[in-house]
Amino acid sequence: MAGQTHLEAARVRRESLYEALVGLEDALSTPVGDGARWRLRVAMAVDHAANRVFEHVTETESPDGFLRQVIDDAPRLVCKAARLRTDHEELEKAVHGLKVSLGEISDADVARRGNRIRNEALEFLGRLAAHRQRGADLIYEAYQVDIGDSS
Image (cartoon, rainbow, N blue to C red; front, side):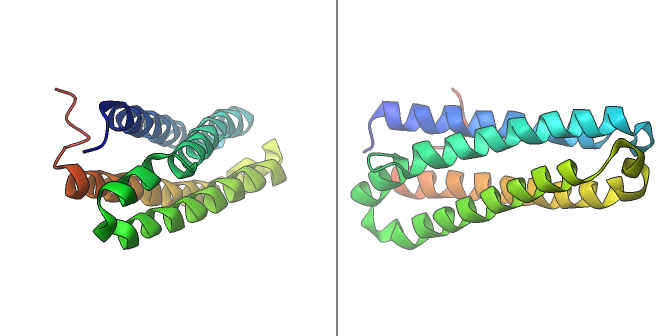
């Protein structure tokens, strides 16, 4: 069984991703018509989400990271771990695309292009939520531990 430190670190990463997800969704739910304020708020939330995703990927995929631990402890899950690595690539690409999209619009353009960016961000949030679910499933299959259960 994985050491408690690996499971606790995974729980912390999971919570960090959740907080970034909620923060971005909250920023996206504000009116686009506020132009500069909306763009700034969303850009800050995207930056926060990007940092959490990049930290998550770095820590999870490091040579002694959690995915390596899972594969060592439960080799039968190698394909599911590979799926999470694919998720990581897709999440990094999506959040980078969001940053680029936000950087390309002026405050005056927000009313015209903000909904497109909002939809792009909502798609990213859906991918992030699905990744968190797949990660929780992998941990449960490997260790019979509900990573979402903090008790």
